[in-house]
Image 1 (cartoon, chains in turn yellow, blue):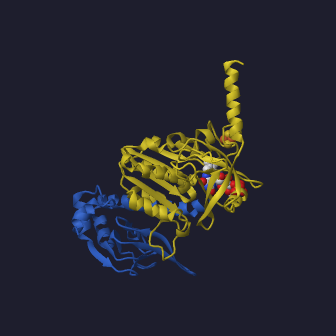
Image 2 (spheres, protein in one colour):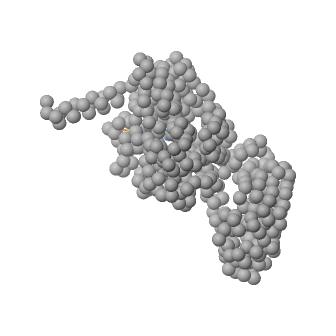
Image 3 (tube, rainbow over the protein chains, first blue to last red):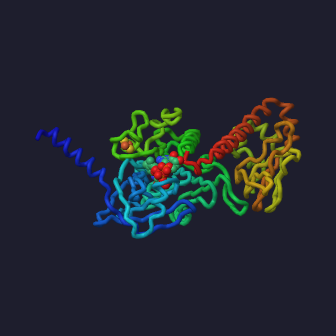
Length: 288
Length: 152
Ligand SMILES: Cc1cc2nc3c(=O)[nH]c(=O)nc-3n(C[C@H](O)[C@H](O)[C@H](O)COP(=O)(O)OP(=O)(O)OC[C@H]3O[C@@H](n4cnc5c(N)ncnc54)[C@H](O)[C@@H]3O)c2cc1C
Ligand code: FES
């Protein structure tokens, strides 16, 4: 066999194995909000799933379908695979309903993640909207574990209502024990809510960071990410230092099917995390 | 607590405003302290002032048949109210303190008079008020999309 053939065979083996789900068992399920739960999974055979923050898996509830879900757990504890899932339809409903003992299929991890370590020595601004806090959680935990390597760190989080705020206990620990300036806001709040009401992008101007030495990581609905990126640019952060996680529909997860294509980009392999200088021309064009 | 003439020039809303104009604004301003539950203004009332929040929390509310809804909140450093500069000079919302709140209250009628006498001051203030209005408009529009609810 020629070297070229060997490379091709190796590649097809890699792709084949990436297409075969591994079996994982649900070991715990925690209710986060009325429509969102965090599942803890362990691999059958116990070989852990090492991952980088911002990566995702293709997660399947047998008989209900397979969907891309970001990993929300701690990258230093790969033996526990965590996924935080919001029930929006067929597959996510089945996943959210999976109780301890249920077997799920897992492919991956896939994609290009946050690479938060690029921000060592500078300030970090995390901007999250809604379920978007879940894909950012591993990056936040990474920063917490190596806090001295970073400058000022802020987390700006917007949710629909106070009941939709994810990871409440984590938010308090990050603020109290890891010197993270955590600012929350909601779209609508009852009178009993003592926090902010307003858009998450309004918080950008309220926190302290050195714009010339800042890495901003943004995750949430696309429109919110665009507004957040614009607010960061307005404050002086350059587009190449703003990273967004593009969570468009995906099927194969390995760059084969074209489901996730955004012009020249295959979001499952080139992303989901990409810098705003690459994304801006694509995000502002309708129907791309 | 710093005096108004020390505080205002550093405030983002007034930053960059010529010193003599700051003096004019300070001449129309007074410190105010309100207790939780007190209204700064009510919808439909004469918009004769605006406020700079020094400490505390203010909710911007509107009434509906089922009760009032909080549309926005203002915190330290925020400016509340722009209706003082735009005819018919009536408040379009309620504003209420929900904690003990310290503010600088600026007399809108006094400032309007100074703006008319010095259009340059009027223009500089208008630019700042328009910025506040535009931020609030963008926030309101974005929230109409119900971004986090619809995964749009
Ligand atoms: C890289 C990546 C990471 C993701 N991470 C998470 C995560 O950590 N947690 C989580 O809850 N969800 C995450 N999602 C979104 C999740 O994959 C979708 O919600 C899921 O595919 C919906 O499938 P369904 O069968 O449950 O719903 P369907 O019945 O297929 O759809 C229900 C509704 O959801 C909308 N929808 C479907 N997929 C998406 C999507 N990708 N983005 C926006 N709207 C969508 C549909 O338009 C429809 O309105 C991620 C998506 C991607 C691409
Ligand atoms: S999901 Fe198939 S190419 Fe990206």
